[in-house]
Length: 355
Image (cartoon, rainbow, N blue to C red; front, top):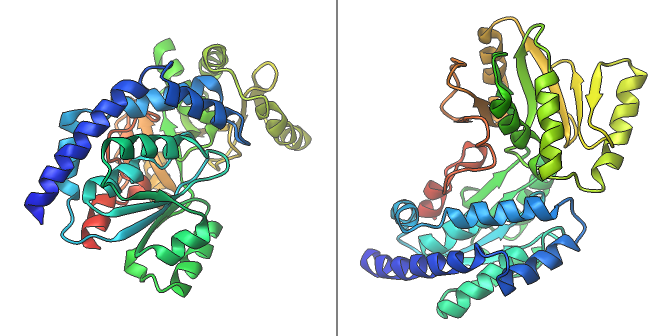
C-alpha cells in the first residue's frame, strides 16, 4: 500500500505543480472565471485580496514542500473524508483539500455560498490531469451521509451542530476534526519602524479581518502612541482598498464606542477602526489596542487564552514565551502560512493517518 501510494503521490504532486504554474498567471482562463464568480458572490472579498490569496497558495506548491508534507500524510487505509469548507477568506479550505488527496483518502467537499467557485475549479482542473482522483462536492446533508470522517471549521455554535449531525449519521467522535473560532494577536515593543507597521497592517486588515490568522488585538507598551500603525493602516488601504461593505459594518461599532466614550481612531471613509481598551477581540476590521506594563503580563494572558488563539505575531526584539501549541510569526507573515500549517493547533496529518 505504501509503495503504491508513493507512486500515486508523486503523480499528484506533479499535477499540482503544473496546475500552480498556470494558476499563478492572473490571465489564466480558469482562474479568471473562478475569480469573477467569487467576486460576484455575497462575501467581503476584494479583487486585490483575492489575487493575493490565490498567488500565495500557488506559491506554496513546490516539489520540495509537497513531497515533505506528503511523507507525513500517507495513510494505510482509504476513507471518504468530508470537508466543510468555510467562506470567510478566499481558498480557506485549500490546505484541507491538499491534505486529503495527498494522504490517499477520497475527498468530498462542501463549499460556502460566499466562495463557491475557487476550490471546485481547482479540483476540476486536477481531475482533468488525473482521472482516477476521487474528488467530489456535495451539499451538507449528502456529504455527512457519505463521509467516514469529517473536517470542518467555523463558529463554535456551528461546530456543535455539525458534531450532533455527524453523530446521528454514525460518524465516530475520533473521526471528527472540528475547529472553532480563533483569532490572532500581535505584541510590539514600541520601536517598530515604518516597514514593521506596514507588515502589521497587512496582518490586521487583509481579507477585512475575517480570518483566524488576522490580528485582532495589538499589545503595546503603556503610553505607546498608535499613530505609526494608524498611518500604516491608511497606507495599506491604498494598495488593498476596503470592501464596500466594510465601512457600513463598522458604523455600528463606531457609534457604540462613541456612546460609551471609548478612545477610537479610524481611517477616512471608515475603512478600518481602532479602539483602545482591554484585550477583547472585536468585530472583523476593528482592531483593539491594549497596553501592558511588562511582557510577563502578556504571557499570562496568552496562556489563559491559548485555546482561543491561532497565532502570535511579534518581532525578534520582543522576547516572549509562547506555548508550543500556539503558532508564532514575524510581522507580515500572518497571512503567509507554510504548507501544512496547524489550524487550531491541530495537526491534520495525524488525524488523516489515524483513520
